[in-house]
Length: 75
Image (cartoon, rainbow, N blue to C red):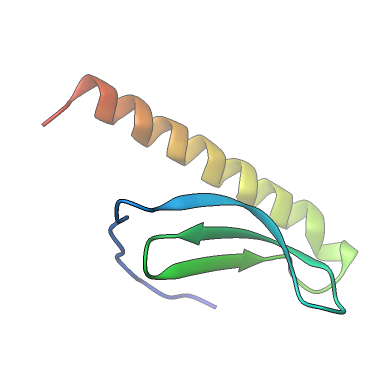
């Protein structure tokens, strides 16, 4: 699934790993933008997890690269 979105974090924005669902115990990366939120959930079965882990590491690296850029180029 592909989608585009643009959200700007509000003053109460936080992120973290959470467990979703009362019965499924599904881990998710949840970003609370205050007031909107975005949840990135684990795909179907363990066979897809290595590719998903690769995606999460790319996401981590991309956020670190952006943070480094913003520290060097403040507004």
